[in-house]
Image (cartoon, rainbow over all chains, first blue to last red; front, side, top):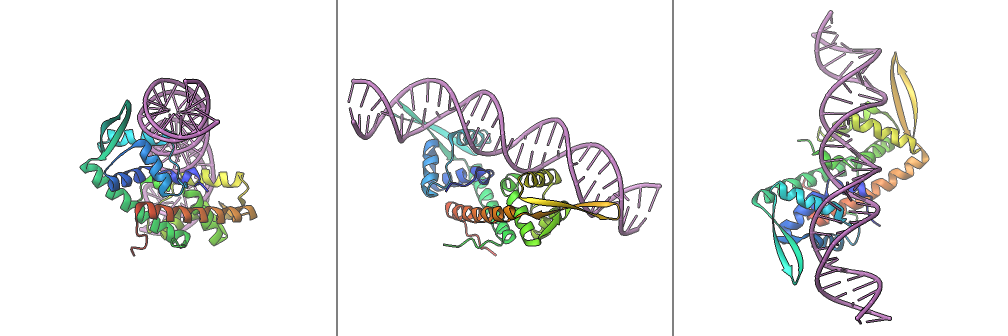
Length: 113
Length: 113
DNA sequence: AGCAATGCATTGGTTTCTTATGTATCTTTG
DNA sequence: CAAAGATACATAAGAAACCAATGCATTGCT
């Protein structure tokens, strides 16, 4: 089962920021694979969604980048800036709050496992 | 505090379906007010978002409508069809699943209250 | 009488994602 | 060793879903 794409909307940026917070330094392809792993294939971030998102984070000064070469293959690593760290806490806590609200609204018991 | 609009994306349809399931028969303006009440103003559904959504639900056969006149003012009431009831269960359970996944991914404790 | 609230609806624009495509390198396998 | 698949970046065209603004009309309050 893969979640319908509407659900991903609005959470992608937060997911990326949180992963960067936890792992300090990651490159794009690694992020797609990590999310896939962590969610048991339920969330599959497409590259067409991820790269534009990463570029926006960079433009907004939330991440810095550096290139690393393994042989001739290049990897573009992303790291949270100080502003990015603050923003991550904001976004994660907003999402947590939103999820509590949704839980109440939909009368969902989130801990079914 | 009002949630950033990206968060609403993808959940609006589910919210509307769930409200209709709980209340059986509601009109548009009532839905906006109910959501505002239930979420302590944190989620404010705009009319420009709600009405197109309701129209899509109707086109898809998930709801039926009937008009009621209070004096000269008209209200368009929405009621779940049998397909709508099934769809509601699907969407709510998908969202519950998604929220559990996000909780795990973001290491969020959803029950802070 | 005038303003806020109620109640419907549409339009234009933006954001955000999908699908498709393009380029290039590295690894595995028959 | 050739082909295929995985790795790794990126962009472009289009769709979906929402926002902000606007419009129209009725009702209630002051």
